[in-house]
Length: 589
Ligand SMILES: Cc1cc2nc3c(=O)[nH]c(=O)nc-3n(C[C@H](O)[C@H](O)[C@H](O)COP(=O)(O)OP(=O)(O)OC[C@H]3O[C@@H](n4cnc5c(N)ncnc54)[C@H](O)[C@@H]3O)c2cc1C
Ligand SMILES: *[C@@H]1O[C@H](CO)[C@@H](O)[C@H](O)[C@H]1NC(C)=O
Ligand SMILES: *[C@@H]1O[C@H](CO)[C@@H](O)[C@H](O)[C@H]1NC(C)=O
Ligand SMILES: *[C@@H]1O[C@H](CO)[C@@H](O)[C@H](O)[C@H]1NC(C)=O
Ligand SMILES: *[C@@H]1O[C@H](CO)[C@@H](O)[C@H](O)[C@H]1NC(C)=O
Ligand SMILES: *[C@@H]1O[C@H](CO)[C@@H](O)[C@H](O)[C@H]1NC(C)=O
Ligand SMILES: *[C@@H]1O[C@H](CO)[C@@H](O)[C@H](O)[C@H]1NC(C)=O
Ligand SMILES: *[C@@H]1O[C@H](CO)[C@@H](O)[C@H](O)[C@H]1NC(C)=O
Ligand SMILES: *[C@@H]1O[C@H](CO)[C@@H](O)[C@H](O)[C@H]1NC(C)=O
Ligand SMILES: *[C@@H]1O[C@H](CO)[C@@H](O)[C@H](O)[C@H]1NC(C)=O
Ligand SMILES: CC(=O)N[C@H]1CO[C@H](CO)[C@@H](O)[C@@H]1O
Image 1 (cartoon, protein in one colour):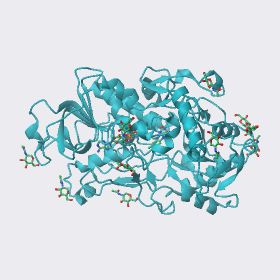
Image 2 (image 1 turned 135 degrees about the vertical axis):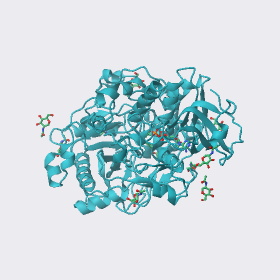
Image 3 (image 1 turned 90 degrees about the vertical axis):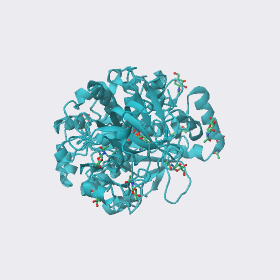
Image 4 (image 1 turned 30 degrees about the horizontal axis):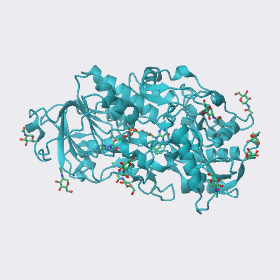
């Protein structure tokens, strides 16, 4: 690996073309913006060919500070989200349908991006959304075509002998990639209770199964990106990034904010990018030249922002910020979708381990940390959420709320996801041993956008998700909340549940439940869709080869390209997108 030091001469105002044939220093075949979930995978795959040089520009931190911020400890996943040194600290615009709150929106600010700070659930969701991507014109993106790319990234370790309650099908995982996927060495007891209650024949009546097979409807324990050898989080940095680091044709710069894509000065035809302008660690503006392509993997907020400040986006928005319009592409920043998360909070007996316990007890925390470090076991060796269920809302309910479109979704396409976090808090701030069972809207109708307010990437764009602006989303949320409550109050849970701590069992009407949801709902941080892969006439930003319309050699290859959000968590699909992007790029070499 080479940590590059480039000459700082190239000022922003100097036409890039003047440098096009300057010294080879500062020239790469590919410049990748964003060393996150996707960017490091693309870089690793491209540098398999030693004749190809790649530079990755990452705004955030190096990975070694993880020891201070505890990124690598799976059970401390809640501590590295919003407001930590490795987060961008985004908040949304005020959400009129969420009690006017400005909701924190974590994004990883570190090598590995959000894979270094997320909850590590490795889920592919239903096959149907990918088939739908293909059906709207993206040949080669149907489930059968993308499945090999899912498998390519990973190395799978089955559950341990004493985890025989975990159903799994190893053939769904078989791959030879560097990313470790396992079930972790600690399954939260609350997850086992909740999973059991969901399979109750007179309740939701779901079946335990392998849920990464494209048909997730049912209940499963979560495959996670945890390295079973040392119980460390495996991020895209510790897997793909470290693999690439041994190669002299792989270069990465951290603390480096891309500020603009540079284009050749040609008057006609599609734009040709020849480099990326960036602000280095000292604040100086520099240029890195891309002889072949510029690849954006800056995530669902970063990628559309960089396109817009570079002159590609909705013309009126660019003009409003004094930016020359190079390509009027109205879809850039639109189609923002995420999965909204909400639910009640329950107080549970002390047998049920939670983060509340170790956060309130320094000696317990020290004991857990020691156990994790020396044995790779115990409360901190697994994610704080160990199971998920995927479910359809029953047809009669869909009829009663007028949700024909949900009813029409192919039968493998789940409407909601259920999970339980071994931690909780109540608005009053009262201490307790809490768990947070929750529902997630898997097929949201509420759409938002990302809007720039400056010509500079140093100023964050406005993130406007418009959550719960759709009445169907509200009604699905109320139904799902009631179901979660019913499960928590079932006989299976009775031995461990002490009571509902939020919102309280006196809150039973639709209005009360909606208000309870609006006061606490937040996304599960899976922003997607803001550079959608679909027809330009339909608001698309990239074609099915991930090339930005109106350009010859700028691609986007991250969660922004999802034309329709996947039905489960988005990390595994982003790894898939990155693997496929690398193949598409190689095919054009
Ligand atoms: C707290 C949290 C929990 C989550 N839990 C899960 C989970 O359990 N399972 C799951 O499947 N998904 C989860 N997700 C979602 C998942 O992690 C993301 O959808 C996915 O990782 C996004 O990948 P990406 O490549 O699009 O973006 P990222 O991984 O965020 O990468 C973008 C990178 O680009 C960098 N960047 C941005 N702008 C610039 C710029 N101008 N110049 C240079 N660099 C820039 C960023 O610093 C970042 O490193 C979670 C996300 C969060 C934040
Ligand atoms: C996010 O907030 C934390 C805590 O204040 C801070 O340390 C960190 O630098 C912030 N992140 C960014 C990108 O500014
Ligand atoms: C399960 O087995 C592993 C060894 O395979 C052991 O280290 C661990 O402590 C066991 N866990 C429980 C809960 O018994
Ligand atoms: C539960 O599901 C099984 C099949 O999965 C079905 O045979 C049974 O009738 C269902 N029970 C109820 C009460 O819906
Ligand atoms: C680049 O294009 C601008 C117009 O957009 C023109 O004024 C300038 O002369 C061109 N420069 C070169 C080197 O061709
Ligand atoms: C809780 O733990 C105590 C002591 O280990 C045990 O006696 C009791 O049966 C447990 N209760 C439940 C519901 O697991
Ligand atoms: C804190 O944890 C220790 C175990 O490490 C336990 O002995 C002690 O009782 C706990 N204290 C409280 C107040 O729960
Ligand atoms: C973004 O969404 C907001 C709220 O829905 C809307 O007012 C605004 O016009 C949108 N911006 C763009 C550029 O479409
Ligand atoms: C960006 O806008 C500022 C004013 O807000 C202006 O001074 C600056 O020249 C602009 N930069 C570019 C590259 O357009
Ligand atoms: C099964 O579910 C029903 C309905 O939610 C509930 O009343 C019952 O207590 C549950 N039974 C068990 C054993 O959990
Ligand atoms: C920012 C910070 O505190 N960094 C420290 C993190 O921990 C390593 C050792 O593990 C120190 O070398 C850093 O200075």
